[in-house]
Image (cartoon, rainbow, N blue to C red; front, top):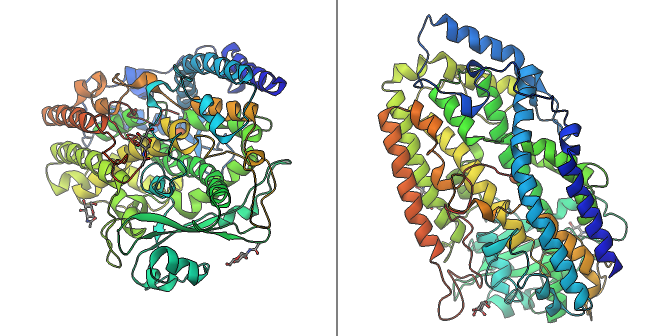
Length: 612
Ligand SMILES: *[C@@H]1O[C@H](CO)[C@@H](O)[C@H](O)[C@H]1NC(C)=O
Ligand SMILES: *[C@@H]1O[C@H](CO)[C@@H](O)[C@H](O)[C@H]1NC(C)=O
Ligand SMILES: *[C@@H]1O[C@H](CO)[C@@H](O)[C@H](O)[C@H]1NC(C)=O
Ligand SMILES: [Fe+2]
């Protein structure tokens, strides 16, 4: 088990570097990053809002001057993570990003200590057991392990039920709902064919029968052929069909095509080994995609919106005060990603099939292709566009766990924002007359925010939708794909390898899946990395989603209606946490069609901000 201790020591070295302040040095934090920053700069949430928030009044020269000072010092610069998306620059911009990183580092270092001791324990357990000799042995990697870094967030059923097709398919509707779409018979064409004898055997109808009835769904990772796997690691670039069964209405997988080598197409009618390996090949692609789609679609979009707002509004403006709250540590992740994930030799190079440099490229591409669009990615708009809700061309899904839970939170956010916005903007002229607000909308152009509403905005509803979206991005959307999700669901072994270690088969009939999977040391490294993203310690604390608006700074600055709305939000989220946390398996071992207990959107568990 030399491998384990070597890799663990490499991991510890990184932990040590982080502790020893290499992180601090690498991002050049000055001795006192806050020196020279005063409350009126509004860069530090804790120091802002000593007075009530207010809309600008014409002729307030002091306020206007303070904004132009901020504007001069908070400018657009290059992204440390290497994308072509803007990142704050200038003296004030750098002070803010530096402060975010420093705050993040405090939390991350505390969590790393947990990961470090859990990693040592897991390594010792596997060494004592003589390594991983069967698929079943991977359970040892989890059972009784990661007690402090993942803790009670382990998802019941993930280790026991992963060979069930319903786990593979229902993951598309719970823990990773951001890549699947329903094919539209009026607009789409079938991207690949499947032997119809097999389709009829599985579904009692043909592929085109499913397609024309609006029952066929696609996840397409074929674009991943453009990346070259790291030496000794292997990847397909899977596209997969899922379908709503015409008889049972169950949502199930139909076929997986590899798009590499001899381009095999697998179905549930293949041997159990072949079909399981096909799903693992898909999951390797899925884990990769989700990591970078999460980065592009949440961190960048929320961050850029804040940058534009900071250049236009006083920190005493209720909208900027709210955006500052939603973006706690909001600029940290780009710097951390570069330092620990993307730069040569760091975690992505060590664990994933493609390189950290490819991850940066993919993030950039996804941003411009789909993830960066602001309005097009509003919850209802995006899920309608992918045929998951309000479908006009096929039957409704029997279970849709993500949509069901996200809808509750989204509705509460929208309710808060409605009161908040309407309490500050009491007539149409207050919104058109708010020069700071309109500046934010105009600023989207030089900020290069994609698909922002166009200036001027005239309706309070436009603003309500914008703010609801940002709140949703940093919480629901972020944590569905990241935070606790990778370690407990989308990256759980052996079903979800970050890399495969044997060549993609060119013929069917694989005898042994083990050679494809991460070895004991590689598995521990993968779990260890993903556990760094978990935050069990935030449950039921001031950091949980229940407290999104329950913040002394906000409550001190808010008008009475907004204070009440913040309390209502907290009450509703606490009640919803009761619903989510009491979910159990039914008598047949399922919960809402899932053979695992997905409780990924518990508002007492997930943070209110994009925590990592
Ligand atoms: C695999 O098949 C699809 C069509 O079904 C095709 O578009 C793709 O180019 C093929 N890839 C390879 C590597 O043969
Ligand atoms: C679509 O579906 C959601 C719930 O799934 C609902 O709240 C919403 O109002 C529907 N309509 C539109 C136009 O989005
Ligand atoms: C899934 O796993 C859980 C926990 O082991 C078990 O209680 C449940 O019965 C399983 N579900 C199915 C459908 O086998
Ligand atoms: Fe994140």
